[in-house]
Amino acid sequence: MESSRSKSRCWREGKRANQDRHGNGDPGKTGVKRITKAIACSAWEMRTMALKTRAQAWVTDQIKRLLPKGEFGRGVAVLTGGTALGQAVTVLASPILTRLYTPDDFGVLAVYSSILNVFSVIASWRYEMALPLPEKDELVINLVTLSLGIAGLMSLLMGLGVGLLGDHIVWWINAPILRSYLWLLPMGIFLVGSYQVFNYWAVRQKDFSVIAKTRLYQGIGSGFTQIVAGLLNIGPVGLLIGHILGQSAGLFTLALRFFKHYKITALNINNISFVARRYKRFPLLSVWPAFINSLGLQLPILALSGLYGAQVTGWFALTNRVFGVPLAIVSASTASVFVGQAAEYLRSGKKLDILFWKVIRQQSFIGIPMLLFVPLSLTIFSSIFGQNWEQSGIYASVWIPAIVANFIASPTGGILDVLERQDLFVFRELCRLIMIGGTVALSIKLSLPPFVMLSMLSSFMVLFAFVYASLSLYAIKRADND
Image (cartoon, rainbow, N blue to C red; front, side):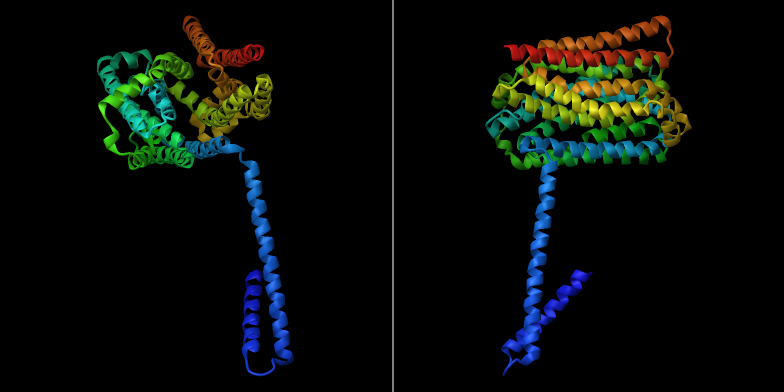
């Protein structure tokens, strides 16, 4: 306010001084004073402008200091920011959703999303991973078409499988209520698979800000749809539809940008056949490792459902939603930066173990304080999410150590891709499956209650995190010695 009044006063003095200078006769003492004041005001304005410019430059410099250096790092920061905001919306919506839906409803959603996640990672047979590679744009549009076509084929196959084996599927996972909603799986696989295709195309174009916006749209679209459906009291289908819309939100935005960028005339069957052969190593070498990895990550949910039903699964799902998802975002960001830096270290001949221990220390510094939530989890869940979700707090008290251990170790796993040690990758994921499968088998044989089963599973996941990081360090030591 004071600055505005000062500017107005300076403007008036300058106007009067200008009249004195251009008027008839001698300006006199009053005119000289006005001219002097105008000069002083001009000097003040110049100093103010200079200070403002320096302040803006300082703020810009501080922002740049906070952002990672280089185009890659900044891209990761933008993507992580968009994903974090989207997931923040999801977590913030949880206290509302837990009052609109039952634990059984959340259990149905958890099982559905687990099945969807297992198959969506191979929806396009991993051809989408090759999108950043072609040098010619005419190959890109054919590779996108191939990927979308395969996603459509997988959707049809899933629909056939649901029609033929639907009753068996819900019996295996002990979720009979899901039978009425299995028809959503084929649609979900196509939409999520298509989003992944256009997402990797946007990565090729370095449209990181656009991708970040779609991640935010996902959180908002999912939360809004689920809340509205909950108010309409339509049951678990509201959570499922919201999840599908959330996962595929932004698809139209990315697809529109793609079709504006390319001409359909470049599309022909010969080019599609060429890119299918040219990048055949992606389906041949990546499909099974990706499938095993995804199955290992989703197996705890599927095992809980198969053993104890939808209600227990819903309680556990909320625990993972509140604690697992936020840490997974940070972990994924660290993993991306770690892989980029590891590649630079490898090219420059630097010791990779230095980078490995740096990441472990950084993750431990962030993750270990999360263990303080263990004694507070029961109070947190019952007060924030309602009395129906008190059991989630009990499960959180034993599951948080597994989340923290995974948070510390998981960013180091990408080094196996950098060093091309797919053999260790497959071995690692088989270890995960054996540990989880062994826990499930023991729980069935001894008829263990859910809390005991989760306690055992958490212990094995902490052990697996040690194996996970150890395999990464082993690959690094071998590479450094070579």
